[in-house]
Amino acid sequence: MHSISYITCKQTHDQTDPAAPRHLATYAKQLLQAEGVSFVWRGLGANMLAIGLSSGVRVGLYPVVRDAMSGGAGQKHALSMTAASMATGMFGYWCSTPLYQAKVCPAIRRMQLAKTT
Image (tube, rainbow, N blue to C red; front, top):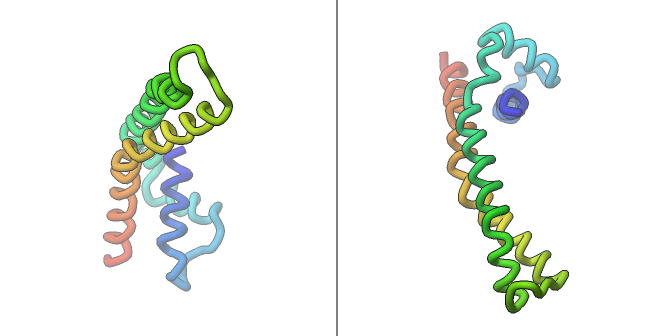
């Protein structure tokens, strides 16, 4: 997952460079030549924390929010279940956004440094 994110990030960053290759396979080949296989593991810890936090918040808060929206435990309505699912999902991703950024920012910095040299 992280390696695809890094390649996509690099491709997006280089879209304004007319000399940059336009195909994902070319980016992957250049990336492997420049950095080796180790680029797959960079940012993996931050990604795992972000997914764990997002999922934990979403799954952990869902029953509480659902019961609060439906008027009490035992009463489940489709609208309250849908609203609770969306609300806890959005809150979980909002909480984990800084960790997702921590995963992507080092890749962007490396690409900016490589471009200036």
